[in-house]
Length: 308
Image 1 (cartoon, rainbow, N blue to C red):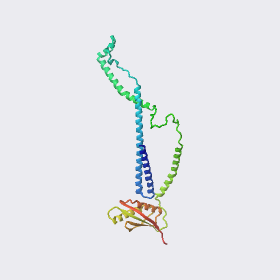
Image 2 (cartoon, rainbow, N blue to C red):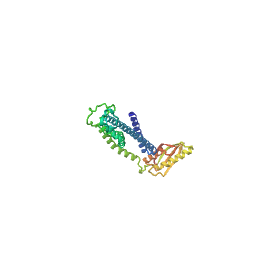
Image 3 (tube, rainbow, N blue to C red):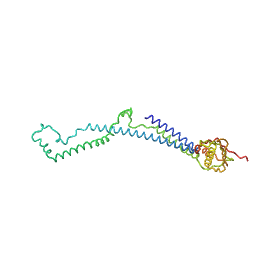
Image 4 (spheres, rainbow, N blue to C red):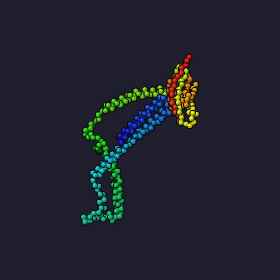
């Protein structure tokens, strides 16, 4: 059980690191569809790890409850063994040897028997006593055993440990290595979180940048689709993808044309040239290919400078 739990933690941890890495990578590339898929996968892995932790805690609680119930039952049995025989409060109703009674000593038996009311009341009292003894004593003893279970010594066994109780130190030794490791991890986290936050913010920023000194930006990409319709379907998919991605840049690209070079190969020319960050956003949008049953791959991009 422990080995399976370790394997589950290792698999979930590696999967979470893998999904988180690609989610950040796709965010920096402006590939939102893939980033969302990686985020959903990361969420599923986190739920998986949380489920494993909860099941482990529930299993430990169940084992502790079973051990506690076993100790309470053991204490209750010991209480029953040490309890002396309870006195019979209605000895006069028990059957006795009549030869042992002589003279007027038999009158204390016959007088109540002859009285109907006395016999009825005595019978009712005996029934009440039996019911009270059968119902009250087990509950009281169980509650008393539960209180005394905390005072009993822990059970000895292989699960407790091989070290005897007397040989254990009264005060645990300080774990300096673990403390130093925790402090080091916290310090590294405090340094890395702002750096990574700044890097991700710069990669996904949407503010306008200064346009480069170039005539236009050219991007060549290949479009493939599994939809029916042949070249017409590919052309429609490419046009739809381009009209969607050209609006993803912060800079204005009203003068943008899309031309076809070869079977599934298209070229886009944008005037004026786009800043490097907008080129990255445009490339990420095209390769993300959010159009249904369409995939696109950027072959290359470049800038054409003016000859003046």
